[in-house]
Length: 377
Image (cartoon, rainbow, N blue to C red; front, side, top):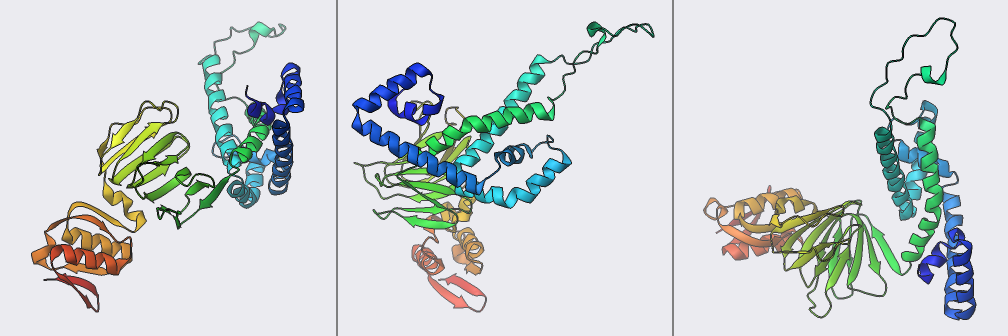
């Protein structure tokens, strides 16, 4: 175990490893200073968690509420506390990981329970009316789901064990700025990252060419720099970029990448050697620890949430229709031009710029009328 890991899990160390760490702390002033910062950080995190989530048992109930494991009274407690729990989850990303861990542990526990229990009750021979009831006479255990208290105790142990991990995650996230929600972030080199509603992104304060997408969808427009590739990390994959436009849709267990222009490579974090290289107009995904799927043609219409129309040989008429939907107005193209195939990006800088670009490609002009806009010869 490294010194940093030993510091993170100091309270759980066996006596010999704790003694070794104590020696290292006495001999290495820098390590001792890091340990003091860690203790201070841990105290701060615990104080914040105690303030935002006073009753940890509620987090267990919240995690188990997606199944039928709660009593009516427990469900009522969760419903009453849900706004506070949701606020705590938003303030402390590590709590969301704790919820996922509790549910994963529950599913694993139930699977093990099902494997260990007989599949059906065995017939019990009849016994005389006044014969004493022996252990052998009792019905065999059924392959039912474990009782609520068993699952709940297992989940509570998961929360207790997760306390140190949450603090370690807080230390891991030091030096990263977290942004979330429907907004566009501009980096120092002019690159932009457009986040969809619900997305959460972390930007390194030390490395401007590194980002973490913790969850949700994001559109990246990265300025080309061959000497400094841009790297996007998700919970289960990594995307390496030279300079390009692409989208990433990430959850805890899946990463989906669509390349609009340029070049990217996608690789699982667990097996970096299993990388694929995408060409413009292709997509690939990493599911859990699997290797990326083979690149396939992407449906660029799925990127409509960005407000930009990405076209690869779409007709001018179809581009106009999508622009009308994106900007909630009427956009039409003269019939003589509507069938022309056009490739490019339209809408990133607003409707007026998009119409001017489309008209320029078609050798036409934009005409405004009472209903909207029309591109005419």
